[in-house]
Image 1 (spheres, helix red, strand yellow):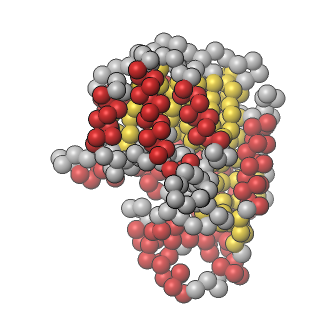
Image 2 (spheres, helix red, strand yellow; image 1 turned 45 degrees about the horizontal axis):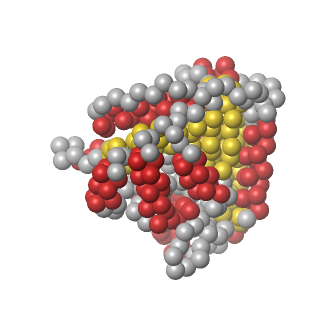
Image 3 (cartoon, rainbow, N blue to C red; image 1 turned 30 degrees about the vertical axis):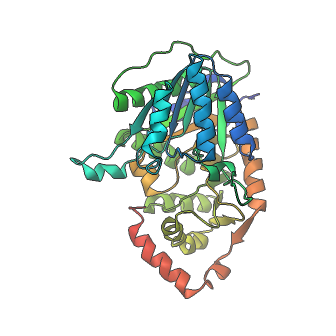
Amino acid sequence: MNRAATHPFFTIKRIQRIYGTSFSHGNKVTLLWKDPQVFHEIFDALRQAEKLICLQFYIFRNDETGTELAGILKEKAAEGCKVYMLYDHFGSFGTPFKFWKKLRQSGVEIGASRPFKWLSPFHYVHRDHRKLIIIDGVKAFTGGLNIANEYRGYHRFKKKKAWRDTGIFLEGPVVHSLFETFRKSWLVWKRFPLAFEKEGSPVPHGIPVLPIFASSARGRRRMRKLLYYSINHAEKSIFLTTAYFTPSRRLLHILAEAVRRGVAVRLLLPGKSDILAAHYAGRAFYTRMLREGIEIYNYNGEILHAKTAVFDGIWSIIGSANLDFQSLRRNDEGNVGIISREFGLQMESLFSEDISRSDKITLENWQQRPFFEKLKERFFVLFRRRL
C-alpha cells in the first residue's frame, strides 16, 4: 500500500531524529470520518474483542451513545474479557457516579485521569484529552471524537448530523506502542500494572506510523517541535484542520514564512463552535493571517471537531491535539503521524471535500464584519491562554 516515500525532509530518519521516537513499520491504517460509519466500526470491533479492551477518553457521557458502549463493555467483561477504562475527570464531570459504579460492578476496571486535588487546585487546568481504544493488542483506534451523542449524530427528538470528526483504525506493531502509552497512564492513575503480551504482526506492504502521545511538559515540547519542523520544511502545501485555534506568535510567524516560500497554506476552521469564547478568540487572528496570504475556510453545517494535518501530501498527522494553548501547552494529547503517499492522497481528498462544504474567508469581506463581532474577538482573545 505504501510506495517509497521520497521527500527531502519528510523521511523516517529525519522525523525520528526530530521527535526522538521510532516509527513502527508494517501497519494497516483505515481512515474513519463518515457518520454513522465511525461508531458502527468502533462498536463492531469491540464486540469482536476476545481478551482485552482498553479505552481512554476525554468525554464519556451517560447518554444513548455512552450507555450503548457501556452495555458492550459489560457484556465483554461477563465473557471474561479484561476491560480497562480511563476517563478525564474534568471532561466527564457531568457523568454520574452511579454510571461508573454499575460498570465497576460488572467487572470493568475504571480510573479517572487528572482528578481535582484540593492541595493543587491549579493543576486541574491540565486535562487528559486523549482518545484511544486498544483491542486484544492487535487493533487500535484514535482520533478526535469522544463518547457522546453529538459525535455520533444520535438525537432522540431531533434529527441532526454528527459533528464532523476524523478517526483512524490501526493494525500492526504500532498497536503495541499505543498499548504501552495506555499502560503508563493506567499505572499513574490506578497505581497497579497491566500486562498483555500479544503484539500485532507486521502487515505486508504496511505503512510506517509514529505514535505522537504527550503526557508531560517534555512530551508537549517534542510535539510542538515536530509541528514546527513540519511547517518549516513543507515545500508545496500545508493543510491544517482544527476545532479550536488560538495560535502562538511563533506559530503565526512560521505559517506566514511558509507562504513567503511559496507554500500553499490552508486552514480549515469551524463556522460555528460549541465553545464560543474559544471561537471568537481564534477569529481575532484572521485579519493578520489573511494579510499574510494564509487561506482560511469556515466549515458549514455541523460543528467541525477534527484535528488533522497534511504536509506536501506525504506526511500526515491525525489525533486529539488542537492548535491552541490548551492542547500544545497543557493537555495530555494523542496523535499518530503517517508517512505515505497513498494515505496522504486520502487525507488531501478528504480536506478538499471539506473545503467544498466551507466558505472561504476573504480579507475584504472579513473587514466588513459587524463591529459587535470585532468587539467579542478583542474581548475573548485576552483569555486565549485560559480556553
